[in-house]
Image (tube, rainbow, N blue to C red):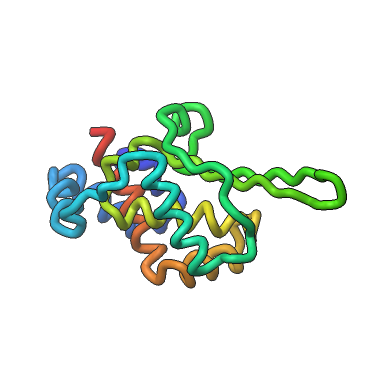
Amino acid sequence: MTTLKYIAHYSEQIQTQAALLMSDGRLGAYLENKYPSQHQLQSDKALYQYINEIKNQYMRNIGPLSNVSYSSKLKVLKHALGMHTTQSRVQGSKLKSHNSITVASLFKEAPPEFLRMIVVHELAHFKEHEHNKAFYQLCCHMEPDYHQFELDTRLWLHWRER
């Protein structure tokens, strides 16, 4: 079986099913049938508004987002699909926080569900730093189909590489 780096931590059964779809050349059709559309959030400004709406709906108390952007270098440099940063600074008698999210630019061409999964993942890191049970519960609270979207995103990454 071919090494499936994006789904290597999934069960052997899922890896076998994915490998079969890829070897038969059916993975692209499966994904296009399940996710027929591409989102329209092409600018950093549109991405900021989108992420801010989700943040305000589920996580009002994390403070405002200072910066949101797409990055073409993210996947290569950090081996990540999205990245969050939090910086706290003392300004006078106040503590100011700087929260930012960067999304890999390859997600400009992704279905809206995949972009949402990345956004939910990065927002959840503002509350839960580790990938633990509480982190995934928060992700599922913001996006009930989080786990399915994560698996399908990983399959989409394999399909894009071929």
